Structure formats: structure tokens, C-alpha cells
Image (cartoon, rainbow, N blue to C red):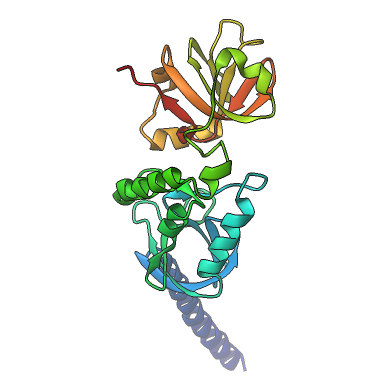
Length: 269
């Protein structure tokens, strides 16, 4: 009886080992599948203008572009256009080889459907601006910037109304920033000082930070600057820049910058 019980235990152990190995192999294959250069799937849900959820419930962030966030002009229009382009359709994802996923776990990809590159369509039609963070998307940078220039010239989509995106919007002096609290606008001035804390970097446009205009860059957003080759904010010191965003009041007027594209250094001729 004891021999029979021992035999049963051995058989169960063998079966369990085989089953565990099978599951482990399946998990390994699934992980490898996520690291392929491309993936053919279906767009299951539209999150916003540049993010979707696919059939396996993974989220995909479109490479090379940025569409308006909730509360910004053209948010709904960009989301609706994205929906018409991909929702319920078969799509092909060409995944960034160097960085397949972002820090939020989203797949970073070029998205194709019906022979069209969705990322490009959204830029051409004025629903998105070019937003390339190295290493992903560098190969299409010039092409996408050309599409963006054409959209700006035509004043279509976001370029017709949203000053945070429009590069030809009204520019005010940093001295007058306090007159535009709550407005999205471009501010021009010289960075006279830079102050760093554990939480943020402050670009000061005057000697009195409690009254003068300031640009605030939070620590969590510094990686975006690093990926664009900006490893130190000292490069802005004593430079004349134009910064675009919403002016807020906190120890004087300030703009919180979360993307390097919001800052333009004025080159001397």
C-alpha cells in the first residue's frame, strides 16, 4: 500500500513538473512576442489622439507625435480622428527596437492601417504636433517636421486655434507676463539665473524670483530634455528664449514646462 502511494506521488510530481515547464515556456514565448519588431493586431479602444488599447489590452503610444491633452483645444477632435482611423480595424505596429515600451509600460510604435501610417496622417491633418524623443522616431524626424510645417502654413487643426501648439502665436515680453495670468501664450526674455532644487529647476528672468517671470521644469520631466540632448539647463543661462505655455501665478508669473518643444532659443544673427 505504501509502495502504491509513493508511486502515485511520483507520478503527480512528474506531471506537475511537465505542466510547470509548459507554462514557463508559454510565458517565455509571450515575452518574446512583445519584443518583436512588429505586431499585427486590432485596435480595441481609443484612449486619446495618440494612444490606443489593442486586443490583448496592452496600450500603444504612437511614436513621433503628441496630440492635445484633456482640456486643451482639439482634444476631442484628435481623439475622434484617431478613432475613425483605427478603431475596430486590423493594424500593424512597427515597434521601436531601442525602446519597445515607455516607463508606463505602453508599446512605442508606428501604427499602420490600410496602407497608411496613422502617426503621419494625424500630423498632416493638424491633429498632432511632432514630438520625437530619441532613440525612437529619429528616422522620420525630417519627414514629420515637413508635414508639420505644411499644417502650420495651412493653419489647420491645432494650428488654427491652440496657441500652445502654434509657433506663430503672439509673443509678449517677460516683463508683461503678469498681465496674462491664465492665458496660454508665448513669452520672450533673457534667462538671468538658474536655481535647482530636489523637485525642480527654475529659470529666472529677473533678480527677484518672487515678482519676476519664471520657467519651472519639474524633475520628472527632465528625462525628456535629456533624450533631446539637453543634459544641463545651464545652456539656457544668459540666453534669450521664447517659452510657450499657460501663465500661472505663484511668487510672480510662471510657466510650467513639461516638454523641451515649449522652449525655443533665439539665435543671434
